[in-house]
Length: 264
Image: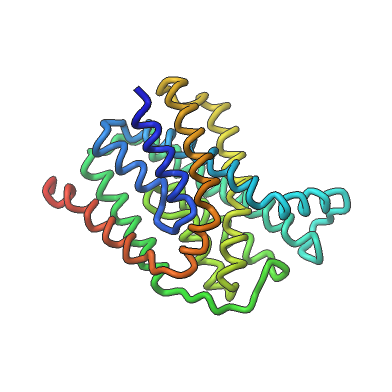
């Protein structure tokens, strides 16, 4: 039965473009309503990012082709066309150094269901509070990327391995803190997700193969994640620029804390 995989793929395909933690919401749903273990839920939710990564590849294909054309003449600096490549390389490396230990800890540590859901709720509230404090009136754009941005954004993206911390939310917020305009911040955030997710999937595949949930669920979830990612990316990026999604994050976080309160 793959109905749950269809649902998870649709949620990933829609929520990935919004700063409300697609992974956090997926893990909450998988653990609390579908009986997945914490390890299964985290592995599967990360795998579903492959579908939206492919959608981002298609959507930002012109930017990616431009980056690829710059590779033959690339030099390790942040000047001219080298800036985006240098940013992506260093930010991806730092993402792995920060995110991998967190992933391994979450995957191998046994949590009481209510406690884990409560932790996800706290992370969602944290994401909402960060978004509430930032504005999109900066003057920096893609040509202003530098070493500090690589380090800060790499750390931020690495922390988003924690379910409930929105990858797009925390990276876009970090860029806005660095005085980038909202349009550039969104583009940079999604471009930097592509190499990070690609390397994460390769690494997880080498370590333990694809999630052991059945090939039908794997393919179905991936397909629906890609299709709905393609259908919604343009519209939802525009919506994300206009509306205060921090409120939604905090509401979801508070709801997730309710089982923990009763457990305690």
